[in-house]
Amino acid sequence: MIKHAMLSSLLLLLACKGNSSKSFIFRYCNSQHENHPRSQSMEYFKEILEKRTFGRIQVENYFSAVLGTEFEIQDMVATGALQGTRGGGFPNANKKYNLFMLPFLVENWDEAIRLLSSTFTQKINAEARQNGYHVPACGISQGFRAHTNNVKPIESPADIKGLKMRVPQQEVYVINAQILKANPQEIPSSEIYMALKLGVVDGQDNPVSNIWDNKIYEVQKYLSITNYSMGPDPFMVNLEWYKKLPEDLQHIFDQTAIEAVKYSDKLSRDNEAEYTAKLSKKLKINYVTVENLEKFRKATEPVYQYFVDKGYFTWDDINEARACSKSNQTTLSIAEQ
Image (cartoon, rainbow, N blue to C red; front, side, top):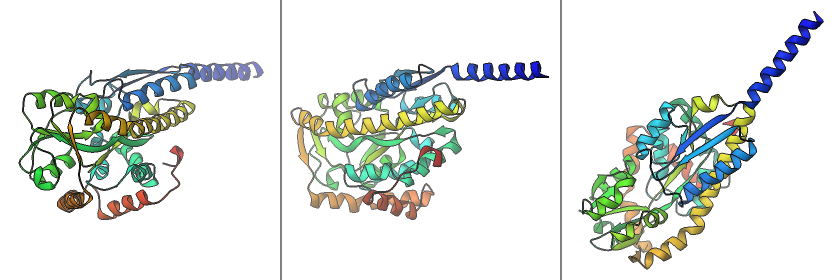
């Protein structure tokens, strides 16, 4: 009996040791170039995670959309061909993420950070598990969006009317452009440059970091600072892969993901003025006045009701999001989500 008990204990110890030494590969892809804040933060994630796990998790990063468009990458994460991404396919994880893109939902970086680090956002992250995603963190998608085009400066809603505008393959931006009476064209981010160069579209909108990194200034004349929207940046992980991690690795993974997203936000915020200054030397830049921004705000109000009517979220959700952006909340820990 004693020998049997000792043998059982030894086998259990060996099993635990084998489990703790098992390694995992985390393959990740996004559409931005390697020098972009999002990509830089993922290199930071790789370095720190591999160090903290003593190599038990190995990270393979792929940038510049080398594996496909954002939605193709999203599909790969959903099927498990890839383990993670950050990019424009996030509505597939949870349709409530559309709420964050609503025009003029928040006014500045501080409000955006408060909202995206709030319990409201973390509940939305947790709901993504129903669609097969684990989302340990959600930041800001590279900053507020500005418009470029080759026709004229955009100073008021009337200036967008009739322009052929490239928009992301995201419903909020399509509807927003339609309501402003533009002619929206859904084009993947990796194809924007050629679409502008060939005259397929007149203009587009993006955070200034993307406008610079994608060299949009080479094929555009005007940059109009509208800052009308900011997107969320959920760190989306294949849930089945995540569940296979031992509990200690899950904790390390989550904490490192949170730090990486915060690092990305800091880079984007710190570099926004620099990107804008560099672009001002390449493009004719104008800042939309407060008076005209209010005109934009009123003109795009129907976007809110459109998505409420579709059932993506409610007015209570919108009001809660706005309240979170104005107040400092204590966020949930990963374990509480």
